Length: 119
Image 1 (cartoon, rainbow, N blue to C red):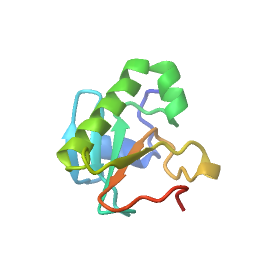
Image 2 (image 1 turned 135 degrees about the horizontal axis):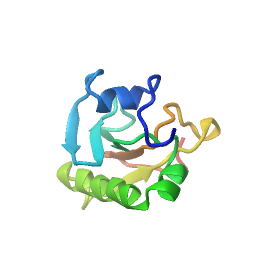
Image 3 (image 1 turned 90 degrees about the vertical axis):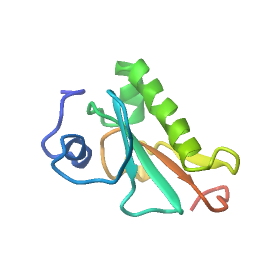
Image 4 (image 1 turned 30 degrees about the vertical axis):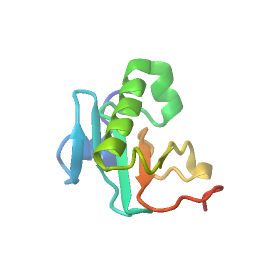
């Protein structure tokens, strides 16, 4: 069921403390941790603690938690010194868009030039 921890979800296991992560911020509803395969000098994932498969399902079911994810992403960017330099905030939705872990998450990416389009 959406919102409930999923036994086979990597990010649910991180939230539960079963898999270690380098946590940079935590609130009652969110967790932010460094990506283990960073695509830039700063690459932090911000996730809701509740399980939703993607950003759209999170926003539909829990708009306030979706807002918490965005707020925390902005605070991560500030903490990492990216607010002035700029950063990218990415939500991949679906395998065709590059989503690998099907637990809603935002990528906060920065610390180098970020060309557009990405790739």
